[in-house]
Image (tube, rainbow, N blue to C red; front, side, top):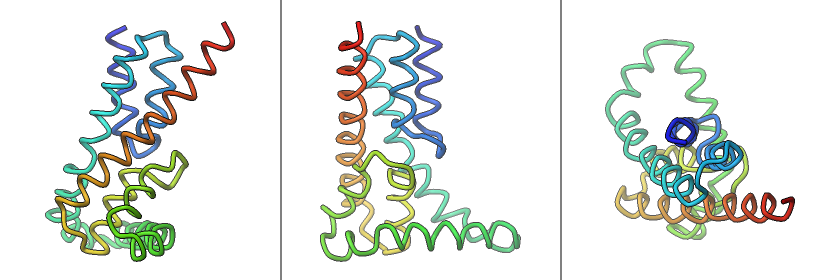
Length: 152
């Protein structure tokens, strides 16, 4: 069970899934549904400070490397396109809703990039991301718990 929760947590900090993948993985492996939720939610929160540090301190150094710069610009444009209207119009709530939607291309990675690009105050952005992560995790967790209990 511990191994499954650790793997679920790794999925939750991964840009390839976040808690949207970590929670289903943990539950489908048979780990305790409550521990899976808590572990994946907390792991997904870690993404914001890690990404913020990377964007603030390390990103500029990598811009000298052409393939990185090309990829970073592509990701930034995609994040701007997906979040601009919501965040400009609704601010904190727009960022929270953007992070909350449990679909690919949304989540804390995109929310942190949007925070960086739109120069949103870090403290407000952190709380918007945490609330969005919680709601997204709750949606995924609740859907999966209902689906797996209904099939028993």
